[in-house]
Image 1 (cartoon, rainbow, N blue to C red):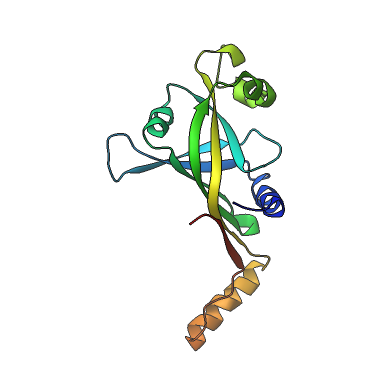
Image 2 (image 1 turned 30 degrees about the vertical axis):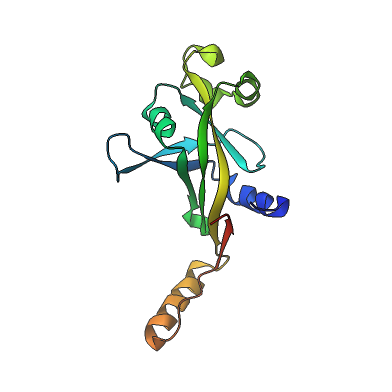
Length: 166
């Protein structure tokens, strides 16, 4: 698990990206993985990420079969990349649905938040990794060129940090 400070760091990295790719294991393929975009609905992070979903969507059945998921967030413009791994579950908790309901979500559920197909996808994060480079593109190009010329160094493109259980 990560510390409160590290959770805040993760939140600061992903909160403006908003949309992450949720990776699940496909139902009918032992080795197949499937990714789809999911939009964050919360305004803080305590170790769990929340998304709205339909109870009849393929991801709901995939998660019922295998709760292990991966979420990735990227902002190439600012050189921020985050990969999070955790356990997912569908929830019909009324307080969460009420708390996170918004106009964006309403567009997907024509019968509103009382639609019997509405669910909250909760992903409890157990580990992850993030990369954050404050170097601009020119510095990155220099690092890659230097590495190719001298063949003895790896380009320094920024910081990478793993966290959580292994």
